[in-house]
Amino acid sequence: MNRVILFNKPFGVLSQFTDKGTEGSTRPTLSPFIDQPGFYPAGRLDRDSEGLLVLTDNGALQARIAHPKYKRPKTYLVQVEGTPDGAALEALRKGVDLKDGRTKPAEVAEVDPPENLWERDPPVRFRKTVPDAWLRITIREGRNRQVRRMTAHVGLPTLRLIRESVGDWRLNDLRPGAWRWASETGG
Image 1 (tube, rainbow, N blue to C red):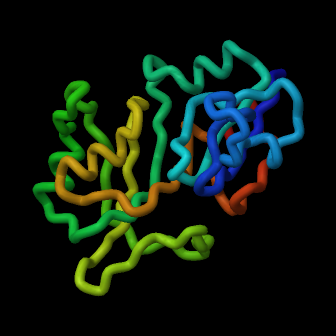
Image 2 (cartoon, rainbow, N blue to C red):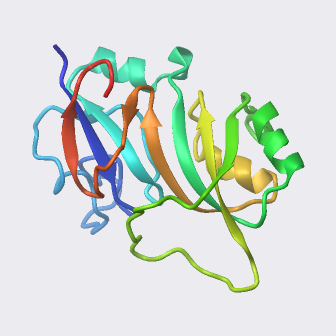
């Protein structure tokens, strides 16, 4: 049986165990959080994004989790600046034209602010004159910064992005910086 770790990646942490790109860098990596040898992230989550990161010790499983051809859905809670209207939501649902091509249709719903959401450090900027809203967005591809680019394209810049699920794996009540074992098939 392949081993799987579910990790709640905090804001500002790189989705890798070392920061080889910058000698002497102090950018935080996964190393202080996960002390299990032989595990690697299955996919990436940007440094300024939070939430579920799936890791495994099996290369074939890692590819099946991360590669877009397997169409494993990824769901995000997204705090956006502005008030979504029907046209913006419908554009996201149909797919939008980005510089690297048209996105596949996404599942999109406006949702209430999440309950029991942890504080982010640093906090999201707050502007009294500009409203914000929360969306739940599910995509089945994984382009670089895709959700952020999609929301910006429809005039709703992303303020905070939290991945809550990858396929059948869910973040649930896992707190930032914590991890737990999971089954190979999800859960």
